[in-house]
Image 1: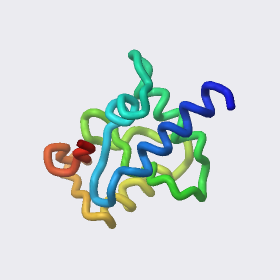
Image 2: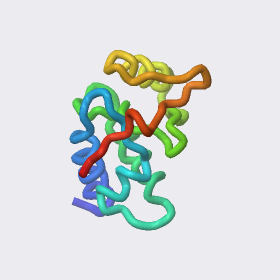
Image 3: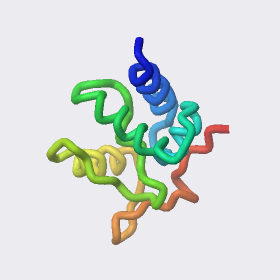
Length: 108
């Protein structure tokens, strides 16, 4: 397994632990997956993109540090992310922001 594959698996393992109705930020996932440095959040995005469709990893529970959904590389994925989170009870304000104080995953 090369370095990128190992990184991706660590990210997927962390994301798989985020409970329904909660979200984590890319930065938080990077820290928990042991991805250090200023590009950690971006590397989490790459790992989630590498999942492809039809997987069991709850990628939709990862949001940016502002509590909003980041643009996705696949058509319709942002809308799907909103829908999945709403079904789990995550609420958005009128501007599409999630209250991280209420919905951010407390992994401790």
